[in-house]
Image (cartoon, rainbow, N blue to C red; front, side):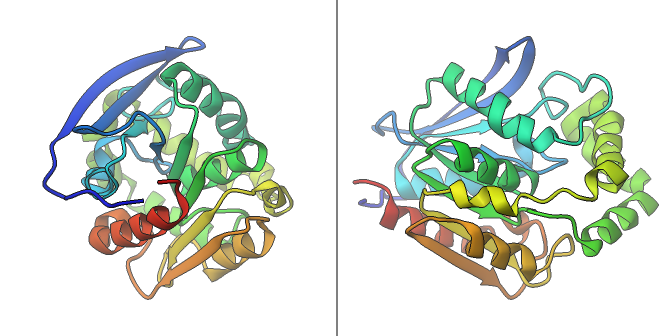
Length: 268
């Protein structure tokens, strides 16, 4: 694939998409003159939203010359509020039921999944059952680690500050979203969460990214993904530093790693 020039115009369009009675915040990024497919599909983290990706999607759209769509899940950003208690299998539900329906409604038939944290796990689970053109997993979780629970506990101790920061993105939904995240991950029902055996169904080219100082997960997550997937093309990128939020701390490096990988594996 020939990389495009970074100065090209990118059109941005926001919309609200209703699928199965749930409203989803959607943002399209379309570089001038780009083809309609494949589409870069950005899946945010457990407390994320469209604006929290900052400029990583636009960097990649400019570099690759491909359109992108950013999707907000229920309870996040401009999407519908969460209703009731979150189910322990919520990641499977998002990957196997919600995401396919949303992509179908958007007319995306050739997705390139780029997911961070929860979004990375959803991307992996989707790819274990469906056929994306490629997968980029950023700091995904395939099982529960003590370091993850410890980091969540530390956030709970400072939740007033975190909730105030999140309010600008999620508004009145902030409290319910924060509680669903913390309560689910700390529940006994979620302690046995492990998707290692399901990863063998992944055949798409995959880039697995994480930092060595990720406060929410260890290198075991990365190695586990790499060991289990059946992809003929798989690459592990373990960065020395950057923490969990690599799209905020190392956006230039992260964009370069992803665009370099996708330029090699996507059809021209």
